[in-house]
Length: 397
Image (tube, rainbow, N blue to C red):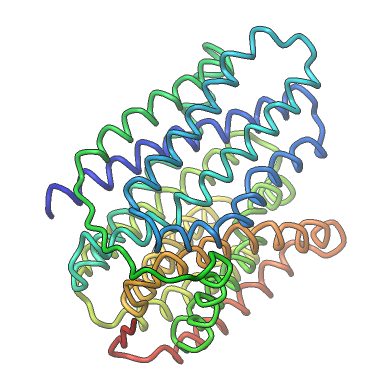
């Protein structure tokens, strides 16, 4: 793999580590300080909703401006806000004021992520030959899983040994390191022809592109449905484990470890497949396995089999994400990739909170086993929908 690709992936993994560290630490800090579900929900909303709103525009800007500077600018802005918060903490005496300022910081950080995320997805096709996209996306998925595996443990260790302020300063350090590495990566930029069009018109053209290009629109809808249906067996797994197997931090930790280990293995497996041209079939098969694991976890009566199923669930999750990302990169014209991946990012930051808002309350009235089984069956159906993706890829401008 080329040196510039390695540097790019490492730079984004370093910044992701700092971002995940802060996100986990802030939520845990609010949970321990308030023991309030309202505050935890508020932090979840502030962490995702601004990203949902700005991802559309982030994709437009990724097609208009040099992507390297968009990523570094978003990273630098996030680091500056985080550094200001770290400097202000010793001077804030009222815990409520501190929580509101942390909410504001989370919202601003989410705005930066809304610019950075679609831009990163749009950069990879500029650095990697099309036949290598699956391999690189698999490696990227594995790296992200490793980061998400390590960050919660690091956040807990820092909060126990030091303070929330120390956690924020670590994020500033990782941002500086990530930006420094990214500056070493030459990222080609083709300036679009001068057009007297507004950003809003370009956003509309991106949506029109997704509608008119059947494969692109289908992939975006599949991703939205996938994120929504992940909620019962994935994001509500802690609730399921505490209800079925008992309230134990050991159980909850084991589930997180199994899931992230599976995702890492799934990313590496996708990387090994590399130049496979049957990515649409890989997507269908991964969705089918994913849904089947959700059903089997729903009926599992013992914890160890459930843990094994969660590991396989993680493998399939990485397979779905890698295949979807690669298929979109292959089927989207270079001039539209920023806008399409802005929509792609918005699917996650929009459908995940929507799924929580729907399935969370339902789980208090309908057994979670039933919700998991039904969502698993729907995921298998979604896999069949992926058969509509045409092969070979038709990449249009």
